[in-house]
Length: 614
Image 1 (cartoon, rainbow, N blue to C red):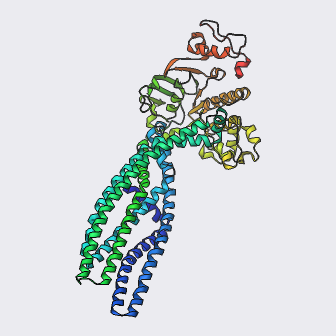
Image 2 (image 1 turned 180 degrees about the horizontal axis):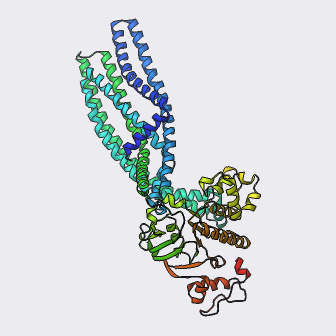
């Protein structure tokens, strides 16, 4: 969508939803153009009638002039209110379209980029500026028409005044140069703006506020936020000073030309070529010309952020359009062979080193697979590739022999269910916070109740004042949950879908106590086996806890973005490699009589009850 197309779209939305307001605005604009010219002509007639001694004519012309002035003054206020109404209508639709575009982008790496962060900073909350800008452009267009009428009238009595449009050229050119500097300074301030807003959020939200208060980091963070605000303010301040100097230069040129034309008109009066009424007409209309021109330039200047919004909106629209592939390959109804990864490689945009290198892996239909490895090994990245949140930079993924990148992301997500370690805390009603795991069943209470039971959230819900109808989140005067309670709600969401082909649990028990964790693992295995029988579902578990890992059919050990080894729990222990070492280290942590370090080759302890529940 081009900038012009976006403005046309804004007008179309307003016409569709507020047609009466649009018609009223256009009528008021036409009345204002007529009243501006009528006021000057009426004032000239007043002087002419007074010179002739025509009292009645002077009174009538005075009334006409007053009516024209009232139309201009009252109409200006009415136009402003109508523009605000239309801008608000369009802003709501712009925000809706912004959110729709964001949700159309399936690739998280596109959303995680610094460029997108700068773009989002402009778009978030800026729709009203863009919508107002669209209607102010119409106001400027009407002002140009008004100026054309004024110049036509001036040309009849003072031909020298027709040179004023030429004097506006340097005004507009210099104003544009100045605003270009301001625009560049705003874009260059993007990182500082995001930093300052991020620090402000940390200092004002209750979650991070606990750690900030305990550590005493508040003053330092406040200083960093202040420094960021200072840098961006100084950068934009210099640009605005430059823009102001260029504007003064332009208006100086215009004033010189205007003064020369006015002196020429005075000479014509002195020579008897024009009357007193003509002089008043020239002075009135020339003053109107100056004011209207300055208003038009100022309007464009003040709404330059609307231009920034439209440019950012246009880039987002293009990104969203390019992100939507045709998705011609259908999703299998049931997995029969499984999911295959061949030479899979992924590198974050702008990064020099791949996160994953040449991954070859068969995820057999109906199997439960565990991913283990140290932090930064690439486990979560691999999960996001399987969920089509990232696109491979090398190699590929196939589902029952069908290329995953040929399947629509939306269609694949409809057959995927997942619980991620950075789960969302939806401040909804409790039943909505669970039901959103499958939007098609948001009001299916039996399914929600089942998901709550499987996600070990039954006790959480039972303790809520209104059960599933309780509002969650203190932000909306609801009940604030603990970390473990929020995770149980998130886990319940993962059990909402009934026919997934891929079932992902990424650190599902990170915030749970050992007993809850053990019970959860038992339920997970039961659900995984049921899904495997019915749909051939591949269940993928990412965990650092070996009591969870050893239950899997197949274990994959990642190290520095590569598969170090894979096999069953017993096979990997017998191989005495990296998995066995990690297993022994964790086992030793639960045995107070065993030294922390164990030499390679030492017999591996078998898990006891304490390890089983971790």
